Amino acid sequence: MGPAEAIKSGFKKSFQFSGRASRSEYWWFLPVGLLMPAVALCVVDRSPIESSIWPSLGFIAISLLPLITLTTRRLRDTGEHVDGVRIPTIQLVGFVITLMVWRGFHDWAMTGFEDADGPGGFGLMIVFWLGSASLFLFALRFFALGLVTGSALFSQMAAPPHDTKHNRTSNPNEVPS
Image (cartoon, rainbow, N blue to C red; front, side, top):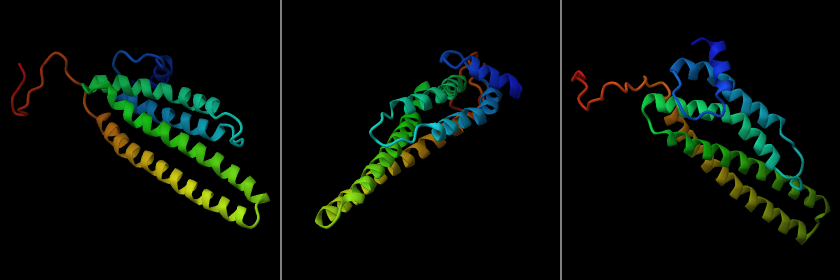
């Protein structure tokens, strides 16, 4: 499958979790599938915490859907369990939500710092640093776990297709019948 066919197929099957996807289909669609959420993340509304972040998260989720469905089909083609895409996806979503909350918290605190003076300003500064440290640790946890599970998932995508006609054996020297 060539690049144009793979990209067209990836978008055409954006809501199809069943079936299989070849290695070439996956690898040709991957750059487009990664670029879409990155662009969506850059385009989302950058307003303060008072506005809802749900439309932004929905836009990012919709842009991730073709890649998630293609990865699910590719996992099925390699003979792996399709739940392998769930953990990295949850970590990615958690990381993005934590970053958005952190940005909103930062904007809220900076607005509060404008009027704070004396002990009130010092208290706000302590709340700001404790909140920022906590959110940083959450973001770091999501990032690290996502990196590990995403790397494992990424390596599974390079696996050859699972042969459904022959049973795989535990002995690599044994030829299937």
